[in-house]
Image (cartoon, rainbow, N blue to C red; front, side, top):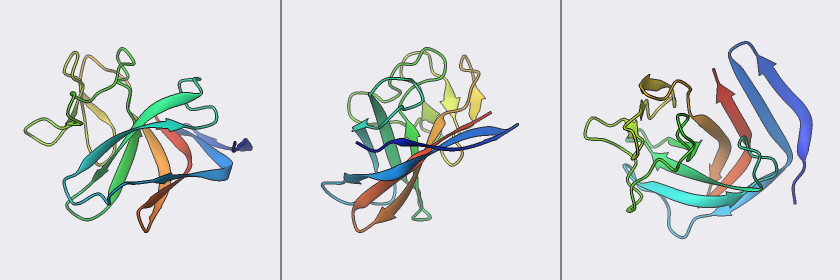
Length: 139
């Protein structure tokens, strides 16, 4: 199991944890533009303190993939509806429970009741593999 490194880049605007050994997640099929995928991932010391946590990845129309831990910052429940839908009609990440909204590109909260931003999964994408490097909590 990968070990969390001592490399913690904390700034007034964010907290970042990088793993000594990246964690590879193999996707059954590649994400196409507009696709999202909710996964249960086993990561050492995820931001919630559990051994296992949920994350989701979404391919933007630009081709870039963004990833976040799948927990509302209001009540820490999974954001997605049962069919892996995360976005509202306007393209914001929406919590299924109380309707908090987050910007898809940045994870920043834009509508309550949540007060905090989503925690970003730091990763690289290579040939259908998402290599998780760590995570970042932006304030």
